[in-house]
Image 1 (cartoon, rainbow, N blue to C red):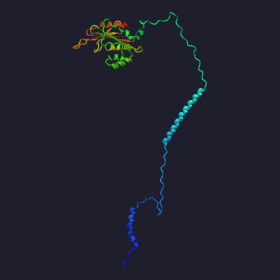
Image 2 (image 1 turned 135 degrees about the vertical axis):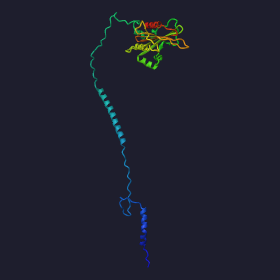
Image 3 (image 1 turned 180 degrees about the horizontal axis):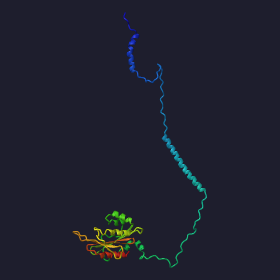
Image 4 (image 1 turned 30 degrees about the vertical axis):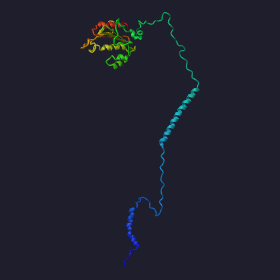
Length: 295
């Protein structure tokens, strides 16, 4: 008789293949997971809600604001209380003055009052007025020059423009206390022109007029200018005259120039003379001495 396979043997023979397939398809459970009873329901753990993080910055800001408000209220309240206490107090009497009555000098008797100096003797009173009145008058028959100023004044910036470095000259003059500049000019003969400038400085500890005149005379000996030491004025202890060498240029008339510099008090005097003919030292000295006499 042939043996026939029972159902158990048939299932047993097919079991390895089925078991292998199930092992490949089933997910691998974590090793630390506890075994569960077959058929038992797996409870679902409730989802944890995120914990609320307290806002420390906002609370700290509120605390600082409260402290600041309390400090301000404390100061204001303390000040108000202090004023109130002070207002309720009786005023403190001031001590008596050491000198009850002020003493004044007695007036001088009649006939002993000192009269002010006349204008002719008071040098300060003369120079405090209209400076243009101290300029030498134009000679009879003189004509107006092309560079004459109608009002007789030069502003300080205009005066500085005649220097090689106007900006530097302006700063220098202001530092020495320059105050104002009065000027006059005239023309005599065919081409001779004369210009006079009175440069006034402030009367203080700076010797502006003296420094200015000495500064102008310091470079007259240079070749670009007179090229000589000049001649002293007989009526002045500090004035000098300078005759410049003639300048010749083809196609132009000869050019002659003379200058004079001096000072008295707070006024520096500058005199310029130009001509196409020779200028003598006597010509420039005569104008300088007459101008000095008016100061």
